[in-house]
Length: 90
Image (cartoon, rainbow, N blue to C red; front, side):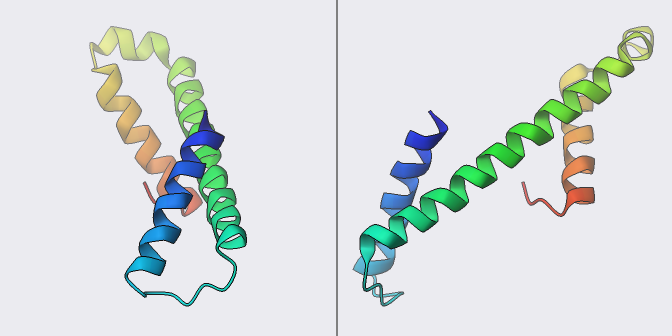
């Protein structure tokens, strides 16, 4: 699924760059593949970030339950913090 999403996004990006003459692309197929690969890496990195955030929250599940905190809010905060530490832009 991530591969398909990245492929459609890459197609749109390259098409827009060529149509608007924002880039001189000699090999559109190669450009699409490079953009697709970068997008897949980014999607996988975000997936790993989310898994790590969930793991951190699971380690503190009892404290979270006892404090009646909102899980989604905490998940967002932890994900943002991890992203910042890793230099990942959300």
